[in-house]
Image 1 (cartoon, rainbow, N blue to C red):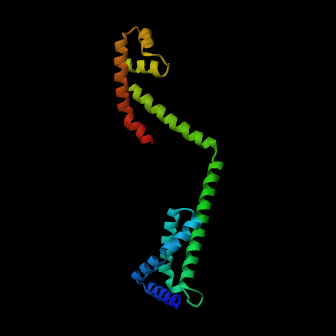
Image 2: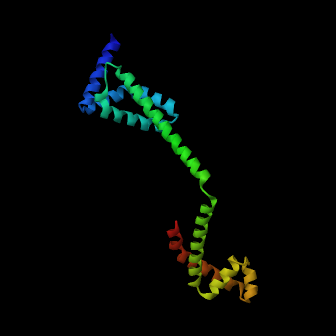
Image 3: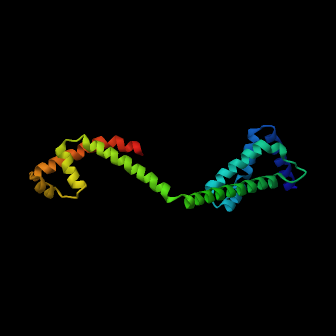
Length: 190
């Protein structure tokens, strides 16, 4: 007798939902959310995906409550069928996305990636060259010897016949100025 009463109540709730009664939808959600959520988690193996799909199911109930036919089954069975169908749809979608991502990763030619890297390096090189051109010649020369020829500050001082303190000061001043010049330019590339 109790299950018959619950069936009638569920049917009445679905009829109220079909008439646009938001409170009835809330009551239906409160009544079945735990059971449906558990089913969805088991199918999807993800709480986040199950939460999303449960919301989709309730939205579908809101939109299609008038489609429920009590002659064909119980409201609970209808809800479980909707939830299961939406979960399977989500699994297919997730699988398709993964296959697409895998395919794109397999099929993307390394040449395209290399071309992008080459372009980026070329742009960076031009920016650095412009910035170096804006530095005083003494600073540029020291930075070029240090970073492009790999000389230490002592070796630069010997090669240029310049005191080591002067080399250090020019290098530090050049780096500070270079950092200022490059700051916004490099950020704009990314």
